[in-house]
Structures are given as C-alpha cells and as structure tokens.
Amino acid sequence: MTDIRKVTVLGTGVLGAQIAFQTAYSGFDVTAYDINEAALEKARKRFAGLVETYTKEVPGAAGGKAEATLSRLSLSADLAEAVADADLVIEAIPELLSLKQETYAKLGELAPQKTIFATNSSTLLPSAMKDSTGRPDRFLALHFANSIWKFNTAEVMGTADTDPAVFDTLVEFAGEIGMVPIPVRKEKAGYVLNSLLVPLLNAAAELAAGGYAEPHDVDKVWRIATGAPMGPFQIYDIIGLTTPYNILSHGNEHHQKLAAWLKENYIDKGKLGIATGEGFYTYKG
Image (cartoon, rainbow, N blue to C red; front, side, top):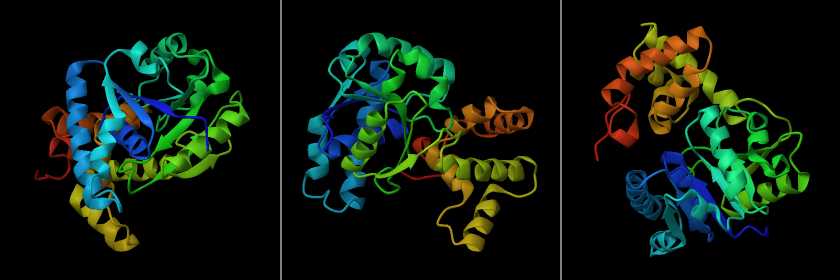
C-alpha cells in the first residue's frame, strides 16, 4: 500500500471528474479543483451523474456505496487551499502546453514538497512540463481512458528525471484505485493508447472532412469489419470534440485543416459530444 491518502484533481471536465470520483470511490480523500464556481457547479452535476452511472454499471456500487463516494469529495476554486496537504496532484486541465506549464509553476510554489505531480495529458510529453514543476524528480504522467470505471487502464510514464521510487508508487496507486497499471518504460508521444487511437480518429476525420464517407458509415464499416463495439466517431463523442480539436490545432497543416472542419461543422454549433447531447450523434437525456 502506498502512503498516498489525500489526492487533488485539477480540472473537473469529463475525465477530470471521472478521475476524482473513481479515486474517492476507492476510499481516498479527494479535492476537485476548478477555476471558478460556475465550473464547480458543472462538476457537482457530473458527480451526481456518476453516482447514477456507477450504481447501474459498477458491480457492488448499488446499495449506497456510490452515494457515499460524495462524502469523500470536496470542491474548491482556491488552488492554494486545494493542494495544501495533497500527497498527489493529478492534473487534468485542457491540452494546452502553455496552460499546463503556467499551472505547474503555480503548483510548485503552493504544494508541499512531499506532493507528487502527475499529468493526465493525452498527447504531451511530461518532459515538456517537468522544468515548470520545480520538482522534476516527483513528476510524471498518469493517463486514464475515458469511461474510467469501464475502460480502466492507467498508463504511467516518467521522464529521465523521475525518481524510480515515485514511478513505482504511481504504478501501485493506480492499482489501488481499481485501474490496470500500464508502465510505459520510455517517453512516447501518445503513450500506448493514443499511439493507437489518435491515428484512427484522424483517419476517420479525414474520410468525413474530405467527403469520402459520412461519419455514421465510417463507424458502421469499422464495427462490422473489425468487431469493435464502437466506431471512431462514437469515440469522438465520448471523448468530447474539444480535446481532439486542441490536439489537431497544434499539428501540421493537414491536421489544422481537420481542426477547422471540426470547429466549423460541430464545435461552433455547440455539438461537442455526449456531454452536450449532440456531436456526430444525438443523445437523449
């Protein structure tokens, strides 16, 4: 068992809320931080929704266990307060390098020296952020998949400066919160999951943006031909279109064209995926 007891999650978006809830569900004291009260109000609704989801989908969560999770979750819009006694801070803020670097610079000053910092970045290398933390030996990546209670992998990837003991601690912690730890032994953009997933999503976007096939038909052929439960555009909707858009926007010229297509046809129309009730598909309730 690790010495981690108090965990702070920065960012209460779709995945940040899931990480916070799953960690609290596993018995840890969790503080969920976001930038203002409006964001925290959305987080409260996400947590309430996760109580319902866990009760329905997670074995053993019925009978009040999912509801009891909320007693171990606190919310804060005060960064200093949120990290004051944290053993571990998991950062799940938007996928923008400059924003993450600025956040870690603040964290390095506010958090106790004992605190381990972990980024949930889906594509950025931890080495791009390590110097901002002020504690590169206690910094690494801990990357989760969406629908964390179901797709329960946790990729652990350090830098050349990460203390091996810290790396091992995070591998053990991932198991303690019900994840299947995936140690990534060398830095790799995209880690394991997104090294496989992002090219698939980009190829799907290229087919639709280029007018070769409709999103629903792209999904249909992928499901039928491979036996996969979901097609790439269904995955887009689960992830939410904002994160793929941010990633594509910082890519090459071709990727930026795909980002513009996403923005014009979906994001600008409020079609961000399941979270907003509509993306490539329409969702009721």
